Every structure is written in C-alpha cells, then in structure tokens.
Length: 232
Image 1: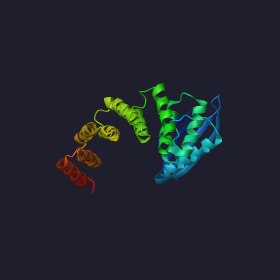
Image 2 (image 1 turned 180 degrees about the vertical axis):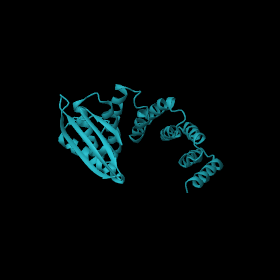
Image 3 (image 1 turned 90 degrees about the horizontal axis):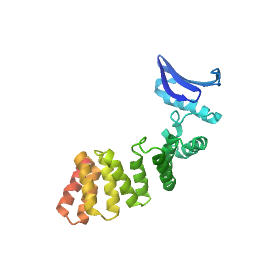
Image 4 (image 1 turned 135 degrees about the vertical axis):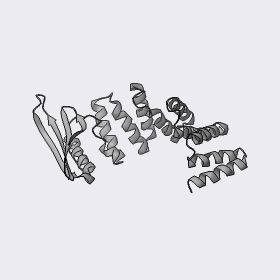
C-alpha cells in the first residue's frame, strides 16, 4: 500500500509496506521533473518512525529546501535546541513561514527561552491569528512563566472566546489571577475548570489553596480531599 507522509518542494515522499517491513522513499526532482536524488530506508513496522526520521536527517544534512510540514524530527524527539536551529534556517529562507515561527516558538518555550517564544508566537499572530488557534494559549503560558501575569490573562481570555469548554484554559487563567492575588477571580476560573472537567484533580488543589487564603477553611478542606481522592 502506498500512502503519502508529506510533500516537499519539487520533492516527494511515500512509503510501501511488504509484510512486516516498511520502506520509506524520498525523491528530489530537477526542474524538468527528472529524478535527481532518492533516499530510502527499510524497517519493521515497529521501527518505521525511526526509519523515516533517518531519511529526514539525511535531507536536512544535504541542505535541500523542504516544506516545514514534512519535518518536525527534532521537535518530536524533544531536541529543542536543534529544532530551533532548523526552524531558524527555514525562516531565513522564508520570513513569513508561519509554521516555522509557530514551532520555533514552542521549541523556544520548551528550551526556556521565554522572550524568544513570545516574539515568535506574536509573529504567528501577526501573520495569521486564525491558523493556529491555540497560539494565544501557549503565549499565555509563556507570559505567565515570564511573570507577565496581566499579559497572560489577556491571552487566555482571547483563547477562551474560541475554546469556551477548555478546562485547561480556565485553569491557566486562574493561576495567573492567583499570582496577581485576585483570589476571587482565580476561584471562579478554577471552579469553571472543575465544572467542565470534574476529574481535574489539580484544579481542586488550586481552588483549595485559594479558599484557604480567603479563610474558607471548610471548603478548602473539601477541595483538598477531593483532589487527593482523584490524584493521590
């Protein structure tokens, strides 16, 4: 069976399975559509992703231009420093490549470069705020971790206008509000997260902590007990 695993600029990738083995092929073409280079790798179905990544590493090392949607090898393997280098090369070639900015922002966040992550996620929003609908959520997290709590609340609020049933969005906004000592607002957000997901153990613990600060001790104990019951 043939099936696509991505497309390249004047290049093509596909795979074929025979029994328990899968062979991945990646072809590069000249302008006149004549085959120029072929990369291939055969592996068991169990190791098919390792095989595909091996091909992609060869392509990256060769310096050919490939579309960003084909390759997230380093990102998927959590090698965020190499991912940043790769996405930066793509951006150098295409300064409006929204995919590269988006995944570089995530890579920078995971690597602890909060300032860089905010710059990249802001660029994503400038290019097209609708393509990656969770970009406001991720930028909100980075802002919160960078102690820009007001900015984080603004981003989570924008995000929740679309994702109105995302318990994590309300929880994260609650954390930011708690950091600003807006305990009533934090309680409301934690409660909303729990209403959406009654098994959100961390949210019970967070609401219990805020209720304790507000001296609602009985309610705080109830929340702590419920959180422990869900997540011992």
